[in-house]
Amino acid sequence: MSNSAPKLHNAMWPGLVGKGDGEGQEPPISLEHMLDLTAAADVNGQKFEGIDYFLFHPHTDPNASDDEIKRIADLIASKGFVVGSLVAPVWPGTVGDSSMGDDAQQQKFLDAVKVACRIAKVFNNHGIRKYGVIRIDSAEFGIAKWRENPQANTARIIDTFKKAAQIAKDNGERLAAEGEICWAGMHSWKDMLDVLEGVGMPESLGFQADLAHTYLYTLGYNAPEHALLKEGYSEAEFYAAYEKMTDALRPWTIDFHVAQNDGTVHGAGSHDKTGKHCQADDPNGKLDIVKCAGYWLKDAPSRGIKHICWDGCMFPNAVLETPKTWNTILDTMIKVRNSHGW
Image (tube, rainbow, N blue to C red; front, side):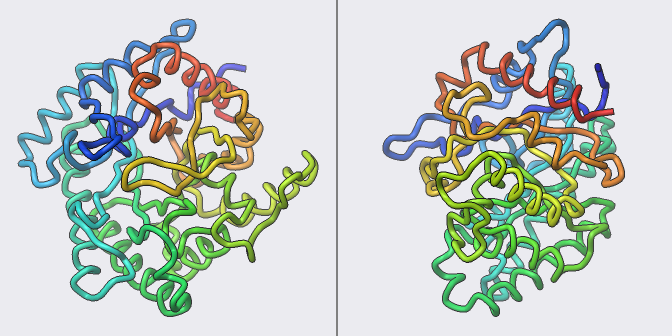
């Protein structure tokens, strides 16, 4: 079966996340080069149809003028792409700061959401963006500080997210909170659900599911009390646990990343100790990507999902610059769409 939706997007941030000028880090890959690598992918005439985009240096100055943002939109369009979901620069060291911090830190977090909404409006008015969300997380990397007072810290994250969701609503946007074990208060499926339900604004704040990260939710890597599986699990045990998790989070899911995980927890640079993405055909991959995607994409149109995106954070540059990488990924995305699309 061949479907035309959801649209197939590639993420631009693998050219940035974990890259830099620090010791042992590889240099970032420019936006135009990432676009060219994406545009070159082709599987029996099917191409990537759009990109998802990180709103920070060196791809984007978050304080760029509207005219500068329009020029970026023109560049993206010239490669044959539209823009879908945007990643707000909510972290310390970017525009934002921790969502569970003091009032000044919270305001910086909210300012980052305002920046993302402004750029989204420019893209929307340009015509290059007609769907997608704005992605956020708690911007509190690691869970040690959160564990000092889980109840109060979760309440603070909820308060920040409520204010952020109102900003998004006022701008005609929706926020998607990324579920990943490295983000405090969002580091387990149960803690993530507590935040979403605590905010209680499903029309403005939902969940972004990433296959690689949510796999680690089942193992309770940073929250053993919420583990659904033990090492050595059987296939039947895995899918029973996976269904329990997806049934809880799917109603909130408004953005979806296709990815693979090899079961290890390691990143790069400042983005260390997080879920490890690996290549779509990695022999050590733990997931049947197509089957697992179906758990998240069930009834996807009713939740406003119009595209899916590949996420390959922290791939080495040599992998990112190999054409076979992108053709294999695109082929996997097509299989997901043909099995679960519309």
